[in-house]
Amino acid sequence: MIVLIEGTLLKASPISATISAGGLGYAVNVPVTTAEKLPKNGEPVSLHTHAVYREDSQALYGFWTEDERDFFALVVEKVSGVGPKVAISLMSKLPLADLIAAISAENAPLLAKTPGIGKKTAERIIIELKDKLAGFLFAVSPQPRESDLPSSADANKTEDAVLALQALGYKQSDAQKAIAKAMDALGPNTSTEALIKSALG
Image (cartoon, rainbow, N blue to C red; front, side):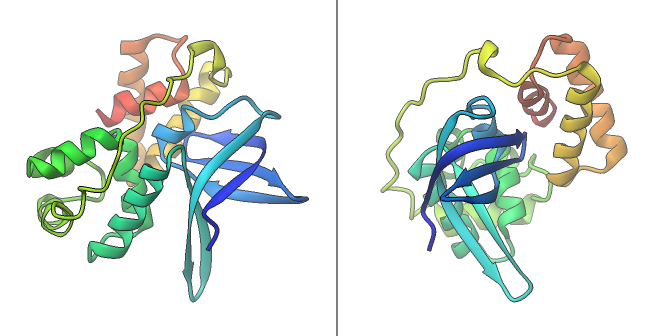
């Protein structure tokens, strides 16, 4: 099992990172909450990873902290009917500490706001996980400065943000409306990650 990858960040999007390590290039799926902390292209990066192997595919999922990686694995392995895509969407919606708090407080309506998670699935997540969260420790990670985030043209930012929302379960028209609203609210100088978080919120 691959549990950590260290290398050079070749490129990143709000939902993925390509990392060069040991002469190989690894495609790593990441939640928005991890993508917003990634360094600039060409700089060293380290992600805690969880590999998912299936008959017809294999995928690597990366997270900024061990706790986030372990929570993702817990969701995928313990909650019936919830796969990696929904788990990543859930972790893109809220920071880990907020997810733990929502599950502990049995706040199903908050979890159900995540694309791909309805009321019944949210309730199932709470039932399956609320007694399995005692081991999580939360380390406060420094938030990236705005100047550290990737810069691009407004058109590219909105396009990337729309594609990210679609990957998280939104229909294209709904994603475009949500990102347009977020851009109006946050202004043209905001980051792609901030647009996505605003649209998800």
